[in-house]
Length: 139
Image (cartoon, rainbow, N blue to C red; front, side):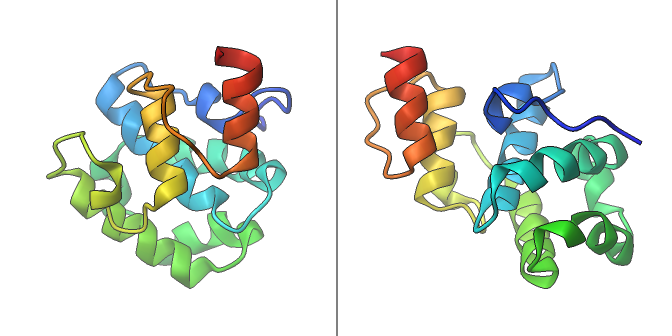
């Protein structure tokens, strides 16, 4: 069993991959998991998910039923798995610029990517946690 992520840091700050490209994919996985879900369940589910499927190519080979079992505590399993697969397929062809070009990634995911990967702190997020992070940790 894997350990949950720390409660005092944002999910995006705790991704395990050292290689930036894989970390970016893990970031997008986290964004999809955080959609319409509180951070606490994600901080438990994400480590288990990334332990099993560390990189995009490995995830695309996963048994969908096994993935559903892992993400079940987050709810909306069928929607999430569709988004995770669509995003991963897009990610393998993605140039790393506009995150909204990835399936299932909207404003929150794009803002989060701009902040955590591009260090673009001029974005104007609508998400309260991203706003708090910029105010307390960056600016």
